[in-house]
Length: 345
Image (cartoon, rainbow, N blue to C red; front, side, top):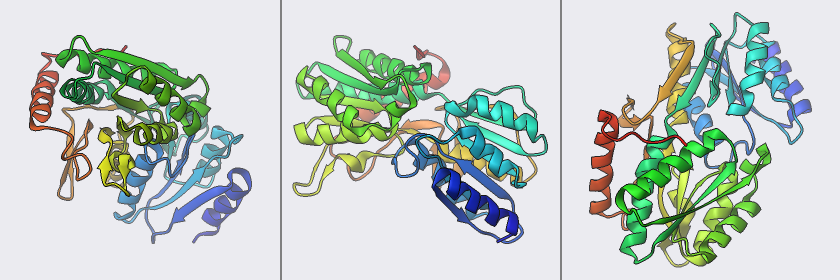
C-alpha cells in the first residue's frame, strides 16, 4: 500500500475509529464515508458498501470510513480527498453541505453524494432515487395482505422527520389506498436528528404502539432503527416491510420457521455507486444529477436491477400471493407510462 494511503488509514482511525480498505494494483482509488448507522445497518449504508465491493472486482481499491458519534463528515471527506483519491463518496443527504464545501477545495477530485442534491458542481455526481415509486409497490402488498387477513390497518415508521423520508411514506400510503381505499395508515417518526436512523429501541417502541392500534403490516424507512421494528413484528407476529436492502430475512424466526418479513422496498444504492465508479474508470464520469426509478434498469452479471423495486425470495415466497404480484406489476407499468402519478408528499 502506498504511504499516502497508509497515512489516511492511520489518521482516519484516530479521528473516526472504524476504517477498512481494499488494495488493488495501479488502479482507481475510491474513498467512501458512511453516515449514521454505518456498516452493518443491513439497509442503506450496507447497500452503498455493496456497490463499493462490486467495484473492487473491476480492479478498484478503496478506503471506507465509519464516523463516530461526534465525527465531522466534512473532515472525513477532506481527509480522503487530501490524499489524492480519485473519487470520494458521501453516503446520505446529511453530506450535502460538506460535499459542496470540499468539492470546491479539490476541483481535480471527483465526488458523489447519495441522496444529496448538488446539481451545479462540475466534479460532483448527485445520486437520487424515486423512493415514492418503490414505496407505492410495497404499499400495495401491505394493504392487500391486511385485507386478505381481515385487517384494516397498516403502519409506517420513518427515521428522521425530513422531506426525503416523507417520500417513502407518501408513496406507501398512495399504494395502499390504490388497492384498499378504506385502509387506515398509522405514521410515526423516530426523531428530528440524525440519531433517528440509528435507534432500534425507539423503532421497536413505535412499532409496538402501532401494533397496539391495530397495525397488521408496518413499513419502515429508518435505517438501523428498523431493526427494532422487525423485533416488534416477530414478537407480536405482525408483518414488516424492510427498506433499501433486501431485509426479508430479518423477519425470520429460526426456532419456528415463521416469516414476518413481508417484502422490502429495494433502493439500489449499490447499483448507483457501482455505476458511478465504473463510469469514472471508463472515463465517463457524469456530474450533475442522476435519478434512479422503476424504469431505470441495468444488468450486472446475470441480474437485472431496477432503480427501485421490491424483494421476492425464499423468506416471503409464501406470503406474497400471485394476486399481489399481478396488481404490483399492473401498477408498475402504469407508473412507468405516466398513467399513475405517485405523490412525493
